[in-house]
Length: 157
Image (cartoon, one colour):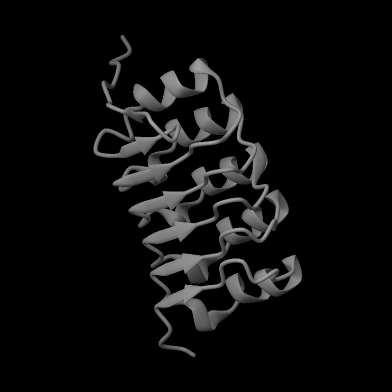
């Protein structure tokens, strides 16, 4: 398992404890793709995932429908270990303006090419933060099933 680069455990009802064991394992140190969609793992799990140095090679992370919330989104956004992500899926995760602003303000997510945030709970304020983020300038940000944001970073004086 030390050479594992791709792991998909979508819709498996994996419990939080099992998912924590996976992301905390040194055997995941070569992982570039991780998908745990529809497992309702929660913000605590997202925080542990974000603090795992074993995931530093991860390029694609799919946490669609996992109740990540603002706390999990903020921890992911502030994780130096996830700075190689190019694709991040946080759709259906109860993220509000707080989480959207954390993502928009993250220097660690500047390599993202795709960011999926549709079906969350942020307002125009969170959407504007994403749209004007100086870190997400090369990122295709999807905030609803029909709308994709184009980016215009704002230079602050």
